[in-house]
Length: 348
Ligand SMILES: Cc1cc2nc3c(=O)[nH]c(=O)nc-3n(C[C@H](O)[C@H](O)[C@H](O)COP(=O)(O)O)c2cc1C
Image (cartoon, rainbow, N blue to C red; front, side, top):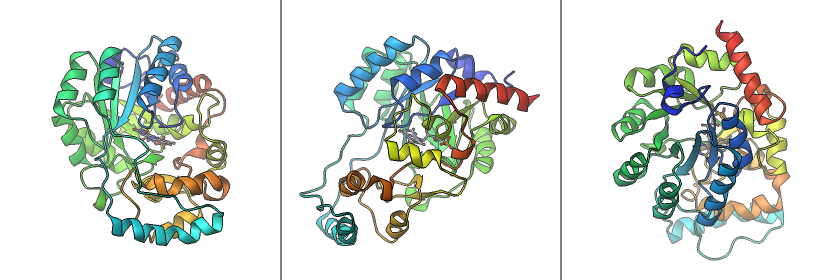
């Protein structure tokens, strides 16, 4: 049924559909359900401390022996100077006061590290079918070591230049991530001048620019979207928002509520939550923060964590995409099956 089987053949999948890695919300139960249904389930590992990573890998291995994807972030180590810290504390003071929380104390520290030696050791011990990355790739030695153990390498591109960069460094498939996508944008070559390209424009140009299979991500949530992606040259799709509200996913309650009520226009791209652009539920707080320079990713969490903990319903801090209203109902396996059946109808 699939017009392009390259991605299925690369990994031995029945269907070229990836459940997107979603750090903090896509754990072993969700990933295993999708992999067991014939797609590629993904663990969002980027924010896990190393010991938790090992536990989640074990829990996933107990649930499935099908191909799985483990996903990490490749951001630069953040640096923050005292002036920027002081300006941010001033800008946020009214928000802490309005929420009745004490401002965070001390120098900001990152809540998690970029992909590094500890992560690599775990992956080499127990290599998954796919190691995928957001915000670029790890260094050439890490890529070579992972490939030497049979891992396929994936990463997201938001421009043609990023896709070429990834292909030149050994990516086995490239995720073309449109502006529609929920969660963090994978933009990494020039985030300060984000071109904000939508999937319909980006996908065919990435397909023309690289030889490896291209996976479409951003705003794909039903059979029509899947069929459109294949018509534009995709060899697979990566879907996040449509799985975010499945019972196996683990978003916080306010996050799940926001995504369930989400409509086409209820999100905005903002760096206010984490320090990097991400598509999140729009709130007055997000609008107010458009005028404030955030701390570099992921140090911004140091400043937003007290607000998030104290006032989740008002501030939301909920990442999801523009297709929440299209998401199918039911457990992940049912959603997956509905997507495949719907795609089959749309492609005939
Ligand atoms: C809640 C949420 C968290 C996400 N976290 C990650 C992540 O940890 N790593 C990653 O590569 N992509 C992440 N993404 C982006 C997805 O990989 C994908 O690009 C996006 O979900 C596709 O768009 P859609 O949400 O419209 O389906 C996240 C998306 C969402 C909705």
